[in-house]
Length: 277
Length: 277
Image (cartoon, rainbow over all chains, first blue to last red; front, top):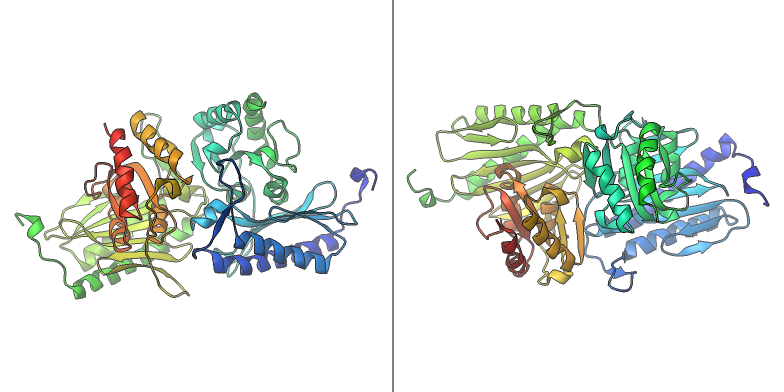
């Protein structure tokens, strides 16, 4: 395809089919991951030079199971995964996967982690899923809406809350040390100093709680495409906005800001632009 | 009682009775709290002077339900609760309660919060419970052992893990701004800089994960007795140590350090003493 922006939109039936398939992938990943949760597990360090980037057999096996299932069902689709890299497809679609977003939380037994699965149509993510198998929570987003499904409970439509003023906002980030430069950190701290409440620790879970209307801003940096693509359809269908700190689409990761209220998003960008290199 | 250290130990039968009663209290609190979780809820601010200390109807109603049940079953027992204060009893026992430890996490829909229930025998907490009703997790500790009970799963004995060296340790605190002075914060940061991993966000949940062997150090400050008494029997029965930063019993709160490994606890105290006023 020479100009991907000319790609036709997916029809509703295909979209539904892909959502059902993505849910099957999430279920599959949960079956692989859960036997390792809160069990003694070998943690390897992917990072060099004194840094720490943990990965476990649960991450690797879950992504492999997802990749195998995609290859069987949609052999022409591409795959981009955190643990096993990119496999180009022969048509427009790519599955973008983080088997465990929040591996640090996972290895210490906390609950704010999840499996991220996105389907990118060649331009943007059109299906987004976050699955927390231990709590049986599944956040799903497409242009047709966003909802939280929990086994044994009714599906619940996700809707961000109105919050125009920074002084009323709840702001989240996974860790204060995730910012990539002094100016990034200072810009985050400035926003935090004017907010009602700042909380750390959350990974993908914070973005889903923003979609659900309980958090107003998530501001992070150093993200990869697979950290963010699954979250975009969930947040946008819930009424929120997610971009880079300079206001560009967030699909490629980097420094990202999500807001439940578009007005608050504008106010945050006005500060965050000063944190950019 | 003139010298409370001369009080006889509880016999096993009475201890079991109190544990069963504490579990009933936790269940009762969960029934009051859960209908408010992730629902629009009015959040009052208990703090003055620009500070923020949120409280909700869920906190207040859950504590009231617990207090009423205690007054009916053990009218001679004292009660100390976060929301409704102290009621002296006419015998040695006092129930020490935080209906929702981690109210900030609760109001933004996160999962690391819980109901804390301790029974103090006049000297020390002898029964400790942490209940997370959304995930149906109940951490229970007495001198006879500590376990995690989850509905639908087998009870699991809690056991801290060995971790002697700070360089191998996972360190948690609820929030970097919880430290009460520059030297407290600097001492925490020094420990964090030498640890394998530091994570924020956790409240009572972090202490229970330490008892379960997934976190090595929890270092916090500004705690109240009801934030900590329920956690002491859980941590100690699991093989861990919890004291103030100066090594005294942690029952009264303040600056607290919990370690899974007694050796690591000693190493932490050796740094934390420099953070004391």
